[in-house]
Length: 256
Ligand code: XBP
Ligand code: MG
Image (cartoon, rainbow, N blue to C red; front, side, top):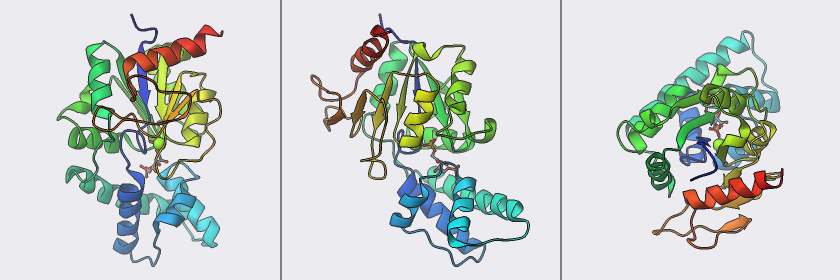
């Protein structure tokens, strides 16, 4: 009998490496479409990722570049809508695969009756299209709750989106395990009271400060690609499975 009831997944950087080859490319395509001479290369984009949210990131870039515009809010909203169109078409072309181990862990969780949810900064439509094109058809229907984007007033690192996901599940933070990739996301889950937190880093987030996250790995991994623990340990098997998440959950709540 597992000690937790739900797995709450972050999306960008966790379910898939969507930032560098996905969102960034879509932003640049939108800039060209609307005739802007802006270009976000991978290094600059890494800096801009300090801010969660696509609209917020455009504003952050404008502030940094000293760009001020009349009707900036409309401009940002329209530019972000153009970016989202480009991003959605990339997802529908199947250009963004799920990270190693994600589909395996989702199947394990489903077979074990663990409830599945998402807590993300991106839009709900982006989540559904990613899951249904990168994973098994209809994979998005496996998720009971998709808490996303502007449904909450404050984006990560604020706890709002995880609090919202828990409330839609009708569960407390002690009932869940969260999986994140970034410092903003880890802070958000921990601030929502979710102590059983796994972080799967990626090229943009390795080296960030994940606070009290008890287990940090380079990927969920699997038989085809063993994972490596950066904080905490992975013994046998050398990848993240339900049993490892159950031990993580027991360890953090046993103390209380
Ligand atoms: C990470 C984000 C998102 C994306 C861009 O989301 O900060 O804003 O970078 O997506 P997650 P939008 O919480 O899943 O890691 O442009 O749709 O905001
Ligand atoms: Mg993320």
